[in-house]
Structures are given as C-alpha cells and as structure tokens.
Image (cartoon, rainbow, N blue to C red; front, side, top):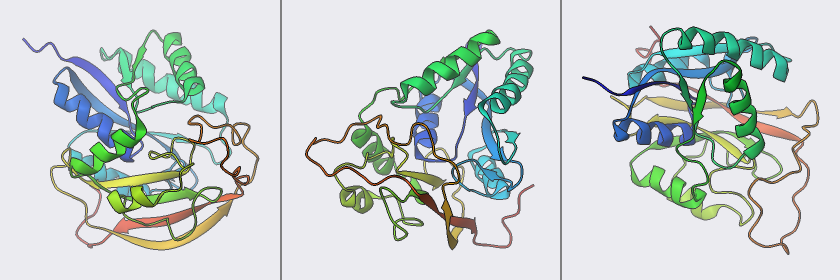
Length: 257
C-alpha cells in the first residue's frame, strides 16, 4: 500500500525550489501532485523572476510533474493573491491534498502569512529548507549538479553584469560579504535548467537584458532577513530597481505542449 503523503509544491523555478523538490522526492515520503507557480497575467511571466510562461511549462515538463499556474493582475494586492490561492487550495483539498511544500528559508513573516492562509482552508505547510545555512544550501545545489542562471538581480546588491550569469562556485565565491549566498534578502533570483530532478536538461539562451525601476517602495525593502556578517560593513543603498534577462529556449524544437 502506498503511504506517500500527497502534496502541492509551491514552485518558483529557481534554485531554492529545485533543491527543496530534490529533497522532497529523495525522501520518498511525498507524492507531489503538481507544481504551483504564480505568474503575472499581463506579462505572462513568473512573478519576480520574469521567466516566460512557455519556458516555465517546458521546465515542468522536463521535471515530469504537472504545472498549476495561478495568475495575478499587473497591480496585484495581497488580497487578490490570497483569494486566488484560496480557490486553488480548496480545489486540491477536495482531491485529498492537505499539505503545501515551500522552499522558504528565513522569512518568518512570510511563513506565518502562508500558514495563516493555509489554516483558513484546513491545510498545513511543510518547509524542508527552513533555517538551513544558506552557504551550505547553495554549495549543495552546485555539488548535486544543478545548473542555473541569474534571471533577476536587485540593483542595491548586484549589477547588470551579474544578471544572466551562471550560478556556480565561481559566482558564489565572488559575492560581496553582505550578500546572502541564496539571495535571501532579495539580492537575486535564478532559473534552473538542469540537474538531478530533470529527465533531461533545457537548452536555453540568455537574451535581452532590461532594467525595471521600482515603481512603488516596498515596506520591507530596508529590512534584512539575513544580517550581514559585520556591523561595520557600509550600509547598502536603497533598491531603485531590478535587472532582468530574458531566458528563452535555444532550439526551435523546444515548444511547450
């Protein structure tokens, strides 16, 4: 008798999600019924990561898991997000899914918000990476053979030359001391295209690089979830915007089903 717990996996397409999914699948305890990703309905791209919908679909296909997409409007609010999420969660709960897995590491407020929303529909969260050392996590990611590129960087921490760069040991070693290894202060986001969870890698190419200024100040932009290692380090400038690169499929044959 199969005693695996059926779960919904909250998926960004980045390194933390990929490493978390690898641990979940390797544990043998869970049956992941779908990868759940939030996309901007106007741009048809993954929220904050800027990855195209069709590239996300190929990524899920190569992993071999169903993809559940949740769309939010261009000027989405927390209320819209929560309402849309609640509808999806209730649908999966009706199918016997009672837990959602997240790759969060340190964001206490975000975890509480997630758990409060889950509790409203009688579900619970699972956080396999919670409070793990981020240097060890990103090193494990590289050592396992995952491949990823930086698809978005915060201009308060990293520059245009970082976006589109391969996430490897050389990149990790080059990070300033006050930049978290996993980007837990929002320093960067990544897109994973190969590794042990993939049936076969994606052939990708890095295209246009664009800068998007921050339209509205973020209430938590100045707070650090991972304090810098030394209080004597110079304080970072305020975030003014983000650099994005357009990750596309390198071969014409790679078309989403």
